[in-house]
Length: 305
Image (cartoon, rainbow, N blue to C red; front, side, top):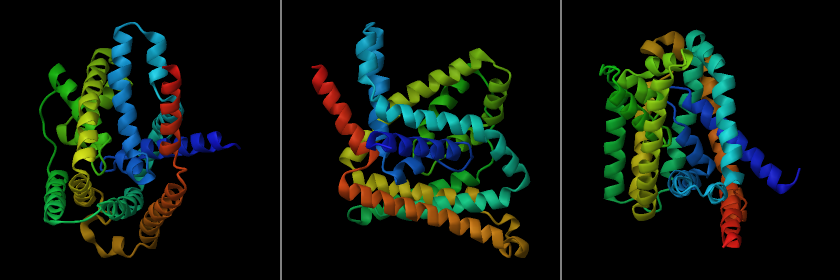
């Protein structure tokens, strides 16, 4: 397998993992992207597609619009996401219904270890970073402990729900599906998919496009201008969100004594640490998928000019 094929396969697996995480209320696909080292490139790609590409399409410059998209990065990642959503939804629904403690234990390990990994990306902690971390952790802890909000299902609510949910899905530590649960829209959106309610799905999709177009730019600006405090806040959100996926229901002795719960929790931690170590080695050699595809796409755009 050549280098390009290996990079595409890694991106596909990353996308598949992100899609799997986004299926679980309380787990964020953005966390997977962050730990995998493709987060900032993902934001750049989203910004390109929702900004430059849409402008070119509106001008009917179809060829230029197609060329503006970094397909070698976006395509395998998108295929991985779609594969997970279509192939694992039923399996995860079964596990959540029949073995929730085991599944939450595994994801608790993933998110817990990811919190540590993301926090290490702060170059130098100061009082502002610590303050952002604590406030974000407390905010997330309170948010995930609140009950479901009932706000109805009007067209405007559907549009706003899509915009908020997609922003949460690309933000490490916050689950878009969980935001839909809090807003009382989770079952409604799923039912719309099952019943093929096209007007509702169109409004929801339009909301996601508007939300991600605006929010991806805001996140890119934050990472560029206020990197450390942004990462500190993100890691705080991740820590606080652990409340939602606490794997020991009712804190009873039986759940604490379940060996499989602890084994899956440790497995989640181990997977993140192994992935992080792999990412660090690739970062040293400049062989990350995001770095390689960014260089290739920049060269392609330069050649077009």
